[in-house]
Image 1 (tube, rainbow, N blue to C red):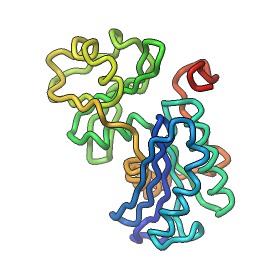
Image 2: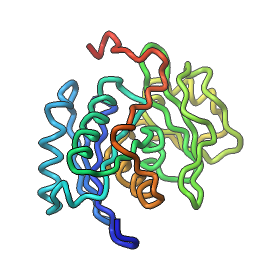
Image 3: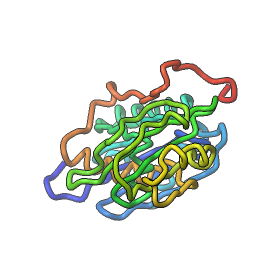
Length: 229
């Protein structure tokens, strides 16, 4: 990478039922999102090729590849990680795994964000972040928990976002009573935010060898759940 040059990043997110792909060139970003259900592996590569063509880039011209590392759908996380690894190995590029809850915080805006995804089986993935000059800093690290047992934060002015609030809004509002000013339940992880967060990672030299990239499951039981089979 040339110091000061605009980074060119390809990013994926397949952590939910949606498949999204983005190409970031400097501050310009082209992206696509499709409701994939269980067709992520079928859609992700054609979407990537289409966006690279739109951006006028060949794979070898990229500076790095990023993926939504999790938490989220086990199958989806493996697809995004595997595709990023395969493409990066072939092109000799570094990769960056970006947390999906941090991507939610980036999408929500504001400076204090509680991000939550529905984890099924009566549980949620939950984290809280504050924006600093160095980017998002975790106030509460990603955990798997029941909505009624979500970690509490100090102070007020928080924004709640993600499918955890869509499904368990009443329980999370009660848990964070007096601290959350607004709720954005429709926000989901997207390759657009994955690319933007990866830009900072690559600029700081935190890209990794693709062979070392792994999903971030959070849930201990790393196996396909019944509804993912």
